[in-house]
Image (tube, rainbow, N blue to C red; front, side, top):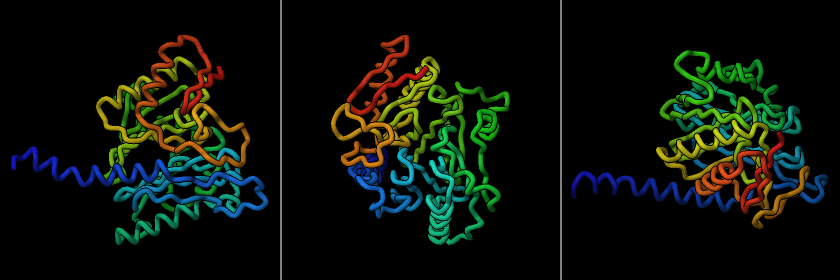
Length: 303
């Protein structure tokens, strides 16, 4: 057996496992509220373990109708928390304690002290439903909290240096044997970023792209951002595009009303690469802002 065949043989099992995990995630029904929130018994935060080093959290719609998703990514010496949800109150939304339980679990798995890990709290953008939980992390040990402003985001990720230009250049964040790519994507908001995780081949896109209403504040910057994501995907495999909300139902082109606290029959959280290509094609067709309803997302300019 030649070296190429041996390499392909070794890669097949991991590829198969990734495909199975993606299939399970695509079929997973996240907590989605209740017809009567007074009778809701779902956890305040759902914890979905994709792997021992990757978690997806979802806020209960009965604590906040936005029900944002939060990503927790572990490396050998750092942990990235991407977004902190829509509620400050720890009784209603105990994000810090949930995150620390996950850190303890991972530290035990790696046979490390919990203090071994630096916890980086980052944000896809600075809208209130993604930063409200920041208060829970302030003045806590081993926490690096990135203030959700353009200047702070750019400084933390190195864009205050002459070698990196915002938003045209990508950069990296090393968690320890897990090197993430940071991609500036202004348009939804000026400090919006995407994160590429090569371990799972995920592209985390915040509110810039998800199964729902894509609110576009700056049409031209948004178009350029999506075009850069498409260009990036040509040289980096993308198995799933992971946003921070679900607003579409499983019926093509049908979304839930704003403010819904009960969303049965939601669309899956992950979007596929062909959806990003479809978004890019639609944007190229329109030189001026235009609302477009598609099967899996709605282009919704607000500028």
